[in-house]
Length: 191
Image (tube, rainbow, N blue to C red; front, side, top):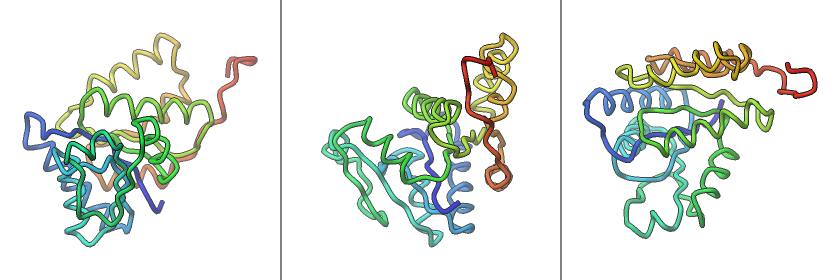
């Protein structure tokens, strides 16, 4: 793993734990020599994560759409800032650049980005690990909902296991290194 895309909030959230978790992940990425690929903003835990990786001697690639760059929230001190035309282009570029994906706490945009790459993995469009860094139990309800989808037979066991979850950045990265993607979903066999 050379590069990981991290989806996260453009605000700090209600608890200092979210910012602290972003700092821990940023330090761990830099320590392991993994380049951060993220949404390119200077605000919220997005900015905290990027700043921490840079301050820890790591590399950061930001991908930001023109719409947001024009609002002057882009981070100006990154290793590389890629400006794209749309939110869709942003996601595609991040997927192309990254060897895996992590969701930190965030809002609907973070969830949308994570679920899209998770679905693409389920369909076999990529074989990269998808993980949730469950800081301060932020994603407990989503994790429970994954279990509910599985129990209700809308998410097979092998796909449920694709959502790698941990509250510790180092342990989550170890799960990424050990990840083996399941076979591609087919509709003819139901497997």
